[in-house]
Image 1 (cartoon, rainbow, N blue to C red):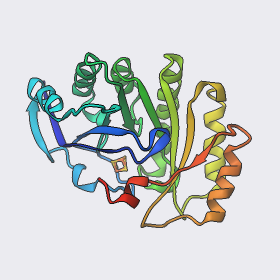
Image 2 (image 1 turned 45 degrees about the vertical axis):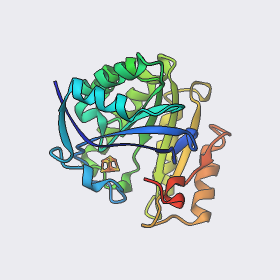
Image 3 (image 1 turned 135 degrees about the horizontal axis):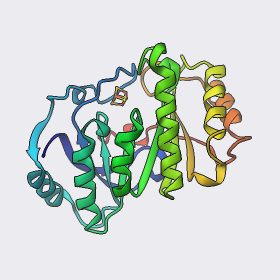
Length: 237
Ligand code: SF4
């Protein structure tokens, strides 16, 4: 089995509920989507990065894994494109007793379910309609898949949190409908966090809009947080 990795590096986690933790990032190459705010555009082509066989990739992870690393984050691109390889790499990391973490747009619940047994911490990202991730014709299918991924993750008792990136283009009604759909599918006790992440440097949402979004989630989940990408303020990758 082969895998294409775009890059591998240690940094401080800048997103989500585990921001601030020392993390080894394994960035998989490839993502077929088109979010207008994507900040890893260089890694989107499937032929970006370098191809390794599985043993080489495991050795690369081992040689980059420095002491007191809190977790290994499989990110992208979208790691689910290379889901079989990600499952093997995550299994390898788990054998070293280091928590594994998956960041994905959850576009395919079958691929997600293949990887899930080897992942300890899951970020389920829900895309808003305005993200330009997919066209409107395919949007409902995307949300259906993300909901299935969310249900799988909480039913297998993974540490699970939800992230939604929002911008000045995000329509509050669409956001409200998305949040309602999420909490019609799971209960608040099943998740470990809900993060509203404002875009940075492009179509940034106003504070008023962020507070309205916060107020939308709060009745469902009162530990909702607005968290920007903190690594960008530090100039970290
Ligand atoms: S899903 Fe992620 S990697 Fe793919 S285009 Fe959107 S932001 Fe970029």
